[in-house]
Length: 346
Image 1 (cartoon, rainbow, N blue to C red):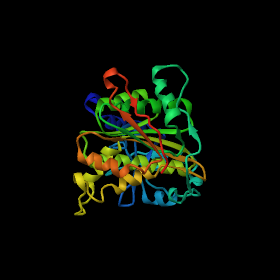
Image 2 (image 1 turned 90 degrees about the vertical axis):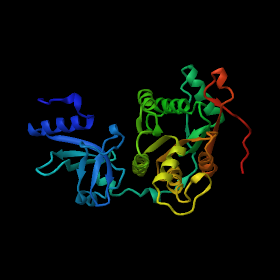
Image 3 (image 1 turned 180 degrees about the vertical axis):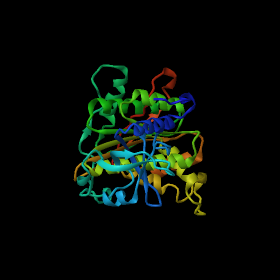
Image 4 (image 1 turned 45 degrees about the horizontal axis):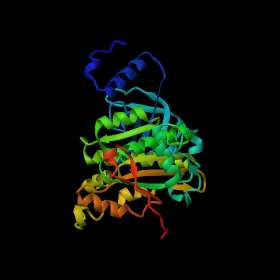
């Protein structure tokens, strides 16, 4: 295609160059992405391959198109695009073909997520795959001790090195195998890059990540994009499952970016910092009109940080399922290890 110095370009720049070459040859170009509307009224389609990070391959969406199709942040849009004109930097959306995998005209009649009727989880998600593997034992224990349903708001409480990442991988693999009709998203916040790669290779679903070398504002942006996308899909009666690792690090990121209120809790947590992560976690629900949003999040304890303890105490009791991992069997290589005890309803 006549492209040079590809080895020195970022992936997003290579995609941009390839699209421009196709446009020069007169071919029709189609693109898709998740819409992020900015304060000025226009928006961009972000790519899930780059975890919704802004880049040169983003697609511009005009304010008139946003108003015409009643689009909101988080809508998954596909359509015909055109190359940038002189003085422009981005490809632009010409025609909308699909909104959230549905016809654009159907998107206008959807009920807003905030107006949907929340219910208790009443449809079970089966974890056991029945293949007899060692990993399937974890899924079997989950089915027996802590069953998960569509619309569950679950918290996995774990000390360091207790196997919470392995548990999330097992849950993700079980959902992809037993429930291919569900939309699975794994959100990794403040994680190590090698763990992100491992999760992407093991999980048959969308893995969105923000690594520890990125600023707190990036952690917040990617989390907001994921929850908004999930809400838009639930409005279209989809069953969406988000596996979050971890809600503790997400709350830390919000604590960094939120404007100071002057009221500081124990551990250095701002009084207003936990409102938005609670709104993220509280979005999980089963919906009477159809669809559900399930969120299974990990919470860190016994880290030696007072802030982590305060964050856990704030989220304790907000979910409708809680699973505690223990560290005492780690020497015997039993990871993950559960702490089972009688449960009493309040």
